[in-house]
Structures are given as structure tokens and as C-alpha cells.
Image (cartoon, rainbow, N blue to C red):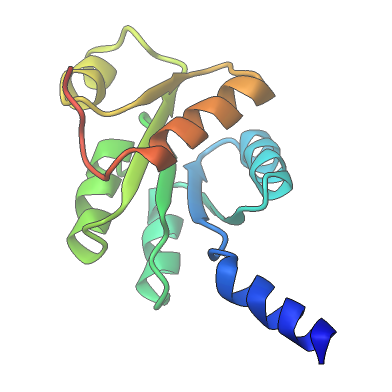
Length: 144
């Protein structure tokens, strides 16, 4: 009877693991990010580009807690992907990543809009810290 109570209490007290949708056109980066986040206890859905992300999210009932996406990708950009997904999932948090920190698109549609940016390349620790920081903030841009 005691063990059953402990198990039930643990299940009731443990919040569900956050779900992160990771979108990038680089397969190696997708695998790296997924491995790091899964080790942190997060559920990870990976998509090779925006088209695949939209397709996967079209068939899900459970909204992701965080969109971690590249800014510059073939087809639909990261900011455009956010626009489309946030219509269906208004509480979606976002963390953009880019190797083109000084590019106009990154500046105009990410930095100037108050969205968090993780410059590529990044370390495991930088990824962990930035994801943790974004998950602690309310959804939406945060202009300082």
C-alpha cells in the first residue's frame, strides 16, 4: 500500500516533460540538438525544414511547448514558420538559431522583434542555458 501511494504521488507531482519541435535543414545539427534536449528530459520532435514541421504539426493534438528553429532555411523561413504555427498554437514559445547573426533577416525578424536568438555554432551548455531561459519566460517576443 505504501509503495502504491509513493508511485501515485510521484505521478501527480511530476509535471509533464516539455515538448520541443526542432527545425533545421542540417541533419547533423538536428541529431545533436535532439540528443542534448532528450538528455535534459524533454520530448523532442525533429523536422528537416519548415515543410516537414508543418506537416508533422498538422497531425498532432499535443502542442509543442517550444519551437527551436533555424532562421534561414530553404522555402519557409523560421519567422514565417512561427507565424503559421502560432496561429494554431498561440502559447508556443520560440528560440531562433542562426549562423547569420548579422544578416538583415535575422536582425529585422528576430532580434528587432524581441525574439531570443542562439547564434551558431553553439556549445551544449549554451543550448541548455538558452532553452532553460526561454522556457522560464512567458510566450511571445520580449523587447528590452
